Image (cartoon, rainbow, N blue to C red):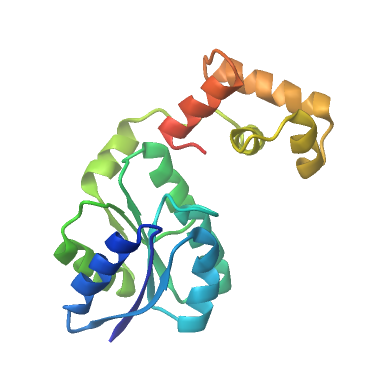
Length: 201
């Protein structure tokens, strides 16, 4: 029996998925989470073989939850579900060592098959998303620039970002100016929008 955990902030969708997966004789849903911050605690309590995580949840997103899960419970494989096929998200997911990356409108039988495949050690990626990623521009921002922009996207100003990253406010402003220039953005918020749409944040 394959033990599965589901994380999605939309209760109705999560319950529907539970019902559909429970129809499979070899799958058992052992845990559910409603936000990204609950993923690791629920997983440590229920010890699933596979965690199926929505990419967009309150708290930390599905990819960062998968990253934490790989550290805290290395035996658990992860599959990310996304409604938006942003190429940058697939790159982030692969860097976080997720085992699967599928669109939310995937047929439930396809999801069940993907769960079996990742338990067998395979990697499962939606072919359309893989193709879009290959064709997309890569992230022009450095890791530090991405980190600074991610904090700016959360509404933090330069002094707050500086305190969090142990930098000077002037250095943070320089990073943000560089980011705006690199992304051909009008301003900081436009840079955030561009990076989010590309899946780089």
